[in-house]
Length: 113
Ligand code: FES
Image (cartoon, rainbow, N blue to C red; front, side, top):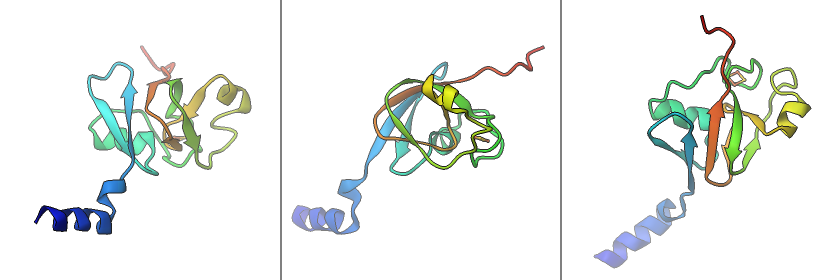
């Protein structure tokens, strides 16, 4: 019986699933981010009120500081994240796919009143 379950797991690929833990500064819970999933999608699924707009790398609303770990960035606009900002460790959560466990902090907006 256990042998069969093991075969099923291998056949359906469940044993090979990769995910990373992402800590969002100021949030109590750690977000589990699946393979090829963005930090923003996983954070929203986890119920975190992460700031966002376009969800396609063009508006910059989800701009964040990568505090630890590494991510790969999917396509995004240079207007949303400049090369200088990227060099300073800033990322767009909607295009950031973790390749290690990470810690991030979204950048404060200037709309506080
Ligand atoms: S939500 Fe617009 S750049 Fe991420």
